[in-house]
Image (cartoon, rainbow, N blue to C red):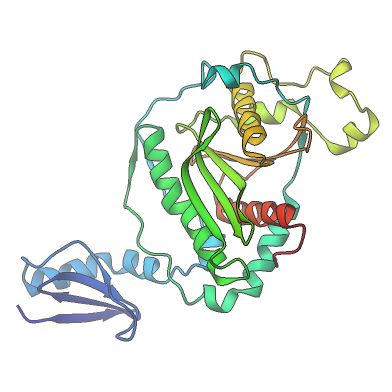
Length: 315
């Protein structure tokens, strides 16, 4: 079958014996779509016409633009659940942090914005790629897969455009003594690798931001009372809540990996935990529920974590 080409709004599609391919111009690398080599040219043109808007949106989404876009939608097939028990005996025996402090995350947005501005030209030349369409999420494994591709991957790819190029390594199922972390991000230097940030994934809807909010103190309140948990305002996580188990799990990871930056993610929610050196206080940032700032928040969180380890600016 001869090659067939068609352009819609600057997006070129080519049907060849190898299948349907997409490109913004003939000079770009072709992006291959599922094979359509067995259909005729008339059917191909109908397909192109019916999908041109979706394909155009995908191709026009650069790595730079994705940091102000929502994560791709998922189709939740699992029922809501809470974490009824600790993930291990080690976590069960871990002492919870003394206090959770509200952190708006302004420092994360600021450093991310500076990084994106500094590297905007090269980031605008790389395309994000085609996400899976209407993916069904049944369990935690599905969350890991989609969050890795749609959230973590763009962040790591973006860091290849700046001063940290070649120095950020992602480790799945990181082993820290007796515990296994879903994902660790390491900074690699002449001195070796050091884990600077970790991500713990959970089943969709297991993370409930409102319960974190109810247990958090403002920095102003903490400054007024160095032991706020002793007063009559009973703002803390219930000993039976799944949120307490999540925080204890994050603290157990932080202690064993010598890493103070831990993110909790179930794709629908993203919570950033920055522990104090003594691990008894944790600053908590609840990223907006619209998911439009998830990538930028994680980028800023990771840059901040690297700066904390290096003790020097990354932007």
